[in-house]
Length: 397
Image (cartoon, rainbow, N blue to C red):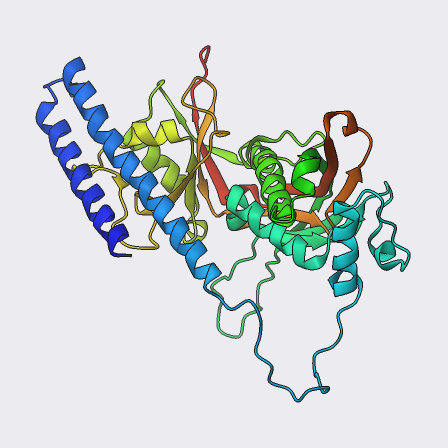
């Protein structure tokens, strides 16, 4: 922890030095020379690299804390008088054992029918409950949208979500006068489920290696592949055989008049969002856009990008946290390049039960075993006014 705090302080000092250098080298036209620009870029790169090292150390600390937790619960009941109800279905130990036997062994047959409760229509098996939670946790690590959005579980079919589309209001009234009627207006948003899948191939040698942690490998690889495609769809999906993206549905709050972003553009975007949604609002943008914003100042001469110097506190833009994604378009004509809003109004619907199926013969000639891994998921911004975007003016506009 001391090392992380030292690095945060070092990064804050490096950023102050970079800002001071930029201010000192600006000409009367507000620009700097090519040589000074190269020097500033090096100073900024140091700030970015320190931030990455801080992130790495914080992740290590989280993993160390997780591994330090006890792996079993102490026995508090009298022997033979266990008060815990026996787990059933996909939560049972028998199902978990049978599932991993079917995944590891090519000639395994479930004679006890333990897997019958988790068989899907395509011949695969739904993962045990405990492993499904592990997959969800890994997906959250890979896809930041899952940490911001509202997650719901669906069993089957489309889910209709009631939403408020208009609000009633109070009115002044005369003494003994009639109370005026003013009702909220309600609508519905429908959220379904789209299939997302991948094939994970593992060599026979690894499968037969007793040290190889198959469960951990599959969880990490599933999360890396599925999480990446989820993040892309949750941000820019067109709704055709995939979720509808946040940027696709969000309302444009501001259109920048030029090919670059100004401080006024960022402030206008901030204030285009209604006050109730600003309380939990955050920015989403491309990392290249963050680089451009680092050079912007507010009306008091303060830079709008603020590095964090405290543990657990993210970097800020205008005192609000931000998240970066390569799937958010870079600054360019006609692009939506920034979002600002309360992303709890983006709903992600997970169809219960992620499925795995072993392929014994398809890759046998290569000495490999394949695993079909799939899930069903949808995502939709149920209240578009809760998120506003900054768009760059089109080339022909």
